[in-house]
Amino acid sequence: MKRPKKFIFVTGGVLSGLGKGLSAAAIGALLEARGLRVTFLKLDPYLNVDPGTMNPVQHGEVYVTDDGAETDLDLGHYERFTATRTSQLNNVTAGSVYHAVISKERRGDYLGGTVQVIPHIIDEIKQRIHRAAEGADLLICEVGGTVGDIESLPFLEAVRQMRADVGRGNVSYVHLAPVPFIPSVGELKTKPLQHSVKALQSVGIAPDLLLCRTDRDLPHSVKSKIALFCNVDEDAVITARDAAHIYEVPLALHDEGLDEKLTRVLGIWTGAPHLDSWQRVAASLRDPQCSVRIAMVGKYVDLSDSYKSLNEALHHGGIAHRARVEIEYFDSEKLDNAEALAHAHGILVPHGFGGRGAEGKIATVHFARERGVPFFGICYGMHMAVIEFARSVAGLPQANSTEVAPDTPHPVIDLLPGQREIEERGATMRLGAWPCVLRPGTRAREIYGQDEIRERHRHRLEFNPAYRERLAKAGLVLSGASPDGGLVELVELAGHPWFLGCQFHPEFKSTPFAPHPLFASFIGAAIQRARDCGLQRGADSPKN
Image (tube, rainbow, N blue to C red):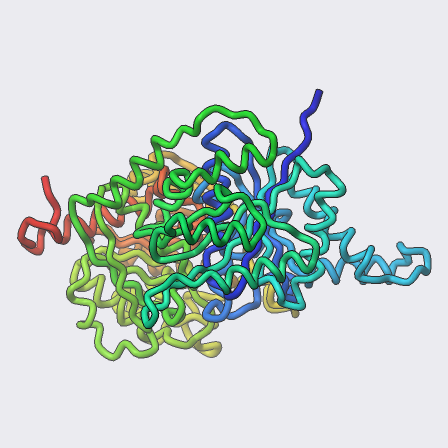
């Protein structure tokens, strides 16, 4: 007999940025460690159809799945914490829901009936929840925004109805809210959480567990007070304390009994979780054997979440070497002198769109190439590396990208034939996982240890094939290309300690348990540079 599917709905209150995505990912990690097949869904209340056109400084990075969906960055947390692989089914926005319902109405699917939020919008949301749950034992659904936001109400209503639809024992509600410490009075204050729970109860949802975001352990008296006023069991009040690193969160929540409580609420029998891999990762982060400094030169540095997956992939590269990775951000638009990067052991130029800050990135590439500093260019960063090489080495001083200078006489980076005729900008993007064949004898082939790879893309412009021969003759190694040879995917320099640019986004496939080989190799090269620079042994230097 097939057992019923289980659903966990994670909501948040009072303010954003508390870590609902991390909490959902950590819950998934713990229940996966107990042998369950978990998957995820992020419900976002904004009216954009997807985050693809949103400013990353406002919304954070756009995470891309294998099937080319442009999604919320929390899907990156889900994939880094568990074995699940997400798709376009795992991110639903209010915009996509309303678009679907209105399209059906225009087609006459509702037979002339009046189309309303209830039942039509709510039913569309519930259908998407069920679709996302297919093939798994358990769906963990994160509801974006905060309880009380008007735009979240349809999602909350759908979530409320799910318990009646699938059975009380198959649904659990987890609510996250702050319990701040007020220094002026020397007390933890529970009132914000109480009001948040009251707002959730007012839409018909009674939470089963409360995750209390705080900077310290909650004493028994505080937990008891929260349980009394929020109508939950005392052991359902979970301390979600600030962690030194996000990969310590599953272990901390396990110590609080979160996974045990959830299995009881949902009537799931499992053995004890296998957390050895999490403990090894946490140990590596707590006791690093060396430290390296990576300079990231980009134009979205005002919000670190703009480069969330990149940040994490760099830390994963550090885990591979038991090294602490210190990331220093530089605004490429304000970088007047690349000498400011002289103290870095490695330099990374990340993705981006548009011409702003391009010259600062090109100057960064020049500095790394000339000084022998390990350099990693990703997507737009690869474009800047190609432009710098064309200008400085291949004798094309006016080389550029048509994204930056549409009238450049040497468009070494350009749209491919056919792209200019497409009016919708999103339709010109190369998205999702694409194959790449690696050239024998190159650094890329050595790093990957295989002939063909598949990596995720999100970009519009490409290496212009008209300049392949000239740049290759000048010494640029084209180390990876599409199977038909038409698209350049990887470039590198022979004779440089470590210089590589890739058209794709390797950060999207990196996890703390399986650091992406490019990041592991890059951090390894940075560690070697730290040694070569003659750092003294100690907390900030590599150890044997």
